[in-house]
Image 1 (cartoon, rainbow, N blue to C red):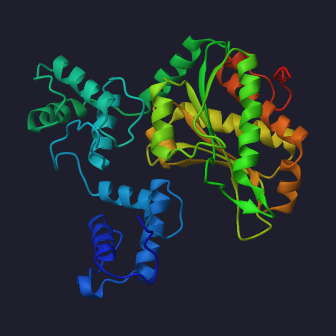
Image 2: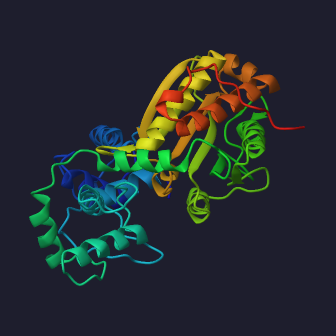
Length: 372
């Protein structure tokens, strides 16, 4: 969809303003004929984006629109069921998932998408409670959830399950399944500065990392490359289909300001919902890259971007520098520097699976390079 921004008007803007009013972020609702994307609307959108872990640009693009349409649903407003091809999305689904997680049923995290895993967890709950196990959240299931919900204390029960799953998989990387997502590919060049394309640099860096992972027996998949410009949804589906243990998405950033520089890492995190292992991996990757390269530490951040939200495994997006920064660009053009970054990312993956007692100091662990 074409993003809506300040100065636009019409029925689409009226719909956005109505949704913002429904969730309490905008007071006045004008008739469609007078619906303008004004300063108040932009501020409300920025507030919503900040709260939801979206890119804060004050515009209504596809991700912001999807998040807005799902934000006004509360558990009990509608019957929830799995719909193949176009699953239900909304805050009511996330609330249901949170309750199922709190009750001990296996779900990765509350992502607000009523996929097959949510339907199966709901069926398990219905069987245990003596209800018809149809995977549909209707009045009887809601009533049972509310009765049991009063006994649920809260916390982050998925954290312990995630930690156990990582520990049970063992410290050896042999046989691990990792999907590598080069930030751009095919006709999508990403940022371009002085003829240098983001797609080319991240593909080369991702290939270096793949070589190092393969040398240790890791099974790897690329989501896209020089001749493959798959969409976000297609790339996330690939990672889900192969049953990946992890996904690493590698990007370069760009800014109108040439002074913007540094590295940052992102994991799935929106409100009370987050990927605990994703957060750990993002932190390890960020610290390793900063320690090994000396680049500015732009820290880690929880986001609900599609690639992080649609994948069922821990997924991390790493912005390895600013192509628009002369300082970062000079480093990124050095093959030895990219090799250092590849080793840092490999070490972060290895440290994720090490017992805490064996976890080395950041920046000192060395891993074998790929054979040439």
